[in-house]
Image 1 (cartoon, each protein chain N blue to C red):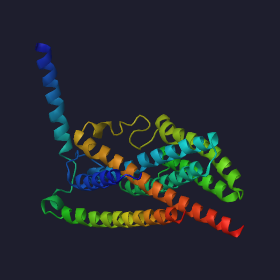
Image 2: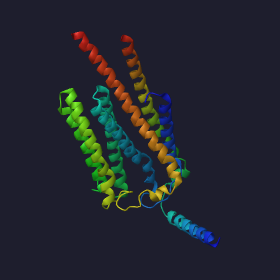
Image 3: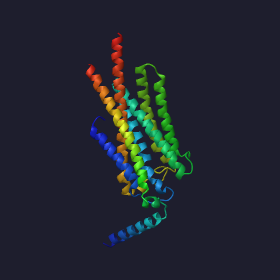
Image 4: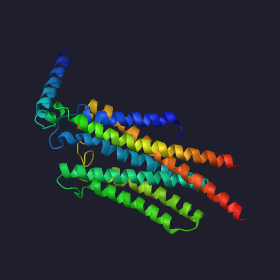
Length: 226
Length: 73
């Protein structure tokens, strides 16, 4: 994400989401009351996480087809930022659950699934940390990355829908259909999702650029030492 | 025509029903009417711009590093 205009779009969308999210009209619902506005901030974290992990998996496949340093760096850094989004998503979810469900950890299938998915991705970083050989590390972790992405999908999207869950959009819950009826919320929600995904890509590409510079320095140092 | 009017009537009834149900939910109307919500908006925006400013600063630093790197060769 080098182009300036994408960064500008990202900032504009997020400023709009913050102002609109706090000030624009929302449906008046019992139990959630004013906390319905958390939807504009909590849910984009998960959308962002899935988008970032998806990009990471794409670069993992690219690495396996064409093993080079760049593909590996792209894969790792997108997974890194995706992890941050996921952790923020689970923390915000706990705050919201404490208010609406009565306790931060309800053992709800959606919560458990999200936690397991994050643990699966934690194992990805553990795996990377435990292999010293660079090529082996890149190859093993690329293969594991694909597994992690495939494991995340049923954990977050399918299992919670098959069992009873209090989380909206799961287990026969009307979910956000009720809120989605409200076009006012869509007007803020979709820009918020786009803005947060762009921010995640921005941070990820920045970290990738840093790593590539670092690698170049390491290479020139190696050349000098010969 | 009769069908359409009936359909509209049912729709209207449903709408008024939802509206009457929705009015019961308690919202932060007082806070909004007093305008204190703008304090919250301002604080969040200041934090957000602080973070974004930091990100832009880091972005520029990496760009200059890349430039120096390429000039070396």
